[in-house]
Image (tube, rainbow, N blue to C red; front, side, top):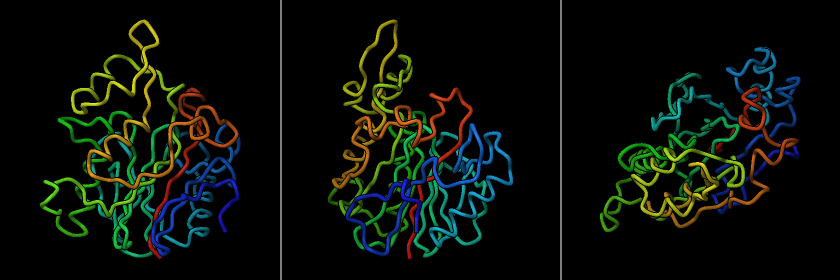
Length: 265
């Protein structure tokens, strides 16, 4: 049984597709990583991280593969031999018992499955990876890889994702807390025609950005109609909920990492 504070996605995934997002609760790390820190690169005691990871895997009954996330667009196909520390910001699998796992502490975790539950994927969408280059960010990359691993794209939608894909967005830094510079706005506007509506000017060249809104728009542009989870309200904001979520920005970079996992039973 998962910890009662952990988030179980509310979405119409097939029954054999399982998913969870851990919160701060349920682990053994001490402050400032208290308590369910899963990141091994944030200064926490290594034994505590290993114990927390072991607890996660025992709880979900699957092998969680922890990536080395670099704010890029790389997608790793997972197998039983995929090692922790594989460099990628998204992963996918069609194998049972392997959990596609993304660590976050302000960035947006995105989980994906199809309506028949034959493939699953997860993506780490910070602003750099989400914006990408030349209109290809981490979501475009993972959806392309997802489709290739499952079946050919429907030619009637000209390379866009088939509508049977379902997406769930987890918590991230919210639109009242994510202040960015003009260069971030420009990076999105270069490849996303409707990007400007997700930025609110605060003065002196700064903007408040709606990261989840930007992601939803990109998924919609890919042809994905079923998008669940984070709707950019305060309940989903990592910064605004210090007892529940880790936040890199709120905690000045000294904090733990949560994990979003999806797996096939």
